[in-house]
Image (cartoon, rainbow, N blue to C red):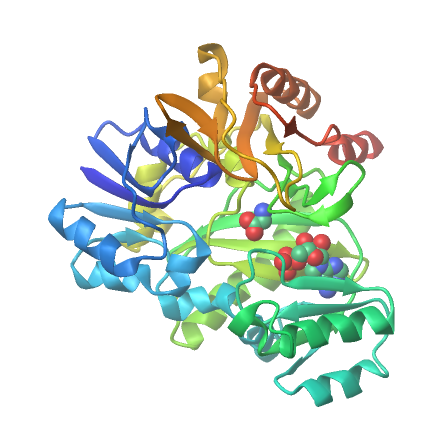
Length: 423
Ligand code: AMP
Ligand code: GLY
């Protein structure tokens, strides 16, 4: 089997490493991939958003199966285009990927089908949005409608901040077209949980829960990033809450998408907040999370390729999806300055002893040497019997990976450990 994976970050590295466990797969092509995964996949310099080039490549190389993981190509219809060639895919079609591609769509879906989420109003007119803010309770949350690299959410503490965010998005076009429409929503409080779920539109199979650390600095300070580390499972996500989420959120979302004629097949990501009024949806993503995938897939005991094909073929309910009851921790090593400006091109040393526990997010070859190439560079990931051990081991791995100007948060998993102790 010749498999194509669209994307090139740490998440894709985790997917590729897991796929390689299946002996039927003879070759994996990563488009574009990154040089840190060159031993596990053939990296082809085709951008993840270049749908025509992806389609040509898949045709010319007689690809048997495609996995599309990033949000952009999914929203742009990469799966639709590959399926039109007869290539089976893992990932939703564009009409279902809209669940992430438009916050207005997802908020309206939740309202229509009674799925718990923050109260909201959506706007495509600046004056109306500003008028609404005059009486909106504070803090208030302003979200760009479309994709914005995870940066389209502003939590405004004051009316002035809220007005500035709205004006930047709608008039200043800070996020381009993505900010032409916006959502203003109620500020919610409580622990956050990420749940990725396999679904084929008939069955919904949640994976082990996880916790992201989105802010750049220790103690959840500093700017929002793509994610500085993760742990799994998330101790706040008890079996009782999991059951409640299944009944009130996961199954109703699947049914809602079916009822709208937008059956979702792939990995649906539920970003949840456990409020005092019960679990609520903060966001949906139409794909595996990054860096959630780096802790979730190492705990998957079943064969990933088998599960993915079952999703594609609508056989998920007959397929075993088993997770280990161990714990995992991923510590991201990033370039100093990220998510702001940073230098790159420094030699990246990953000793062979830890190579299998590192997912490379940003690297390229320069004069025969692996060098850093991005903000997030490496996800150092450990699996252990306990969460405390997984955290300790992940930091030990991180100590062995070297590049100039590296930084990581020192407190990945500490809040989870604290929660576990209090239980
Ligand atoms: P999103 O990109 O929608 O996941 O939002 C990024 C982050 O902003 C989330 O992980 C939350 O921490 C925070 N956030 C988003 N919406 C809300 C909300 N309604 N209330 C409080 N925090 C929120
Ligand atoms: N880690 C959050 C995301 O993938 O959107």
